[in-house]
Image (cartoon, rainbow, N blue to C red):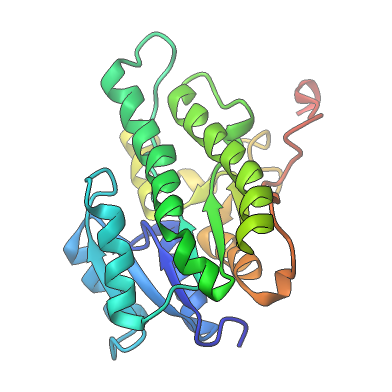
Length: 260
């Protein structure tokens, strides 16, 4: 198994991409800290993925709280004694443009999507240095520009991508810690299903997607992101660091929209 006996922190892992990554990591032999905001979802996730509760620990806390970083690290050490990897997956997703984004909304996107991962990485360096561990940041293809209605979210993910490129060099050379990023495109998660219906789309919207967004006639499943994360987390990735993998079904640069 590719992650045998490795201890991995996965923020935002009670649903969606984070939950899928947690499942894949456990299947590959890892121990996982499950983190989220809702205790009931965390309990359901742990029961589903680790009924014996011997390979998972759970922490429920908002990452924007001042004690969150220390609590995540301490909870993991108390449960497993070491930390081999961190997956920064927790995110604030939603709409906002240049006209309707106020300071509160802007700060929320930056705080959860950029500030929290930054300070979690900062605090976890000594622990990952001991294990020659690694970090995987879950970004978004919106980091390159984003849609007009996703401006603050896209800006925050753009900042995360810059952080990944920067630390992928710095932490690798100075501390032996690899840092990489996955930029998912459109993913069919539980929350995305609900979000689109709240925006007025029918319950079966995934069955009728415009070809411009889904040339393959479908969008991605969270498991397809998780399989890529396992590669970066495993020793198979070798010295790969500072890499950003776009998981999308069309090129982000050079796409000819006029012909779509």
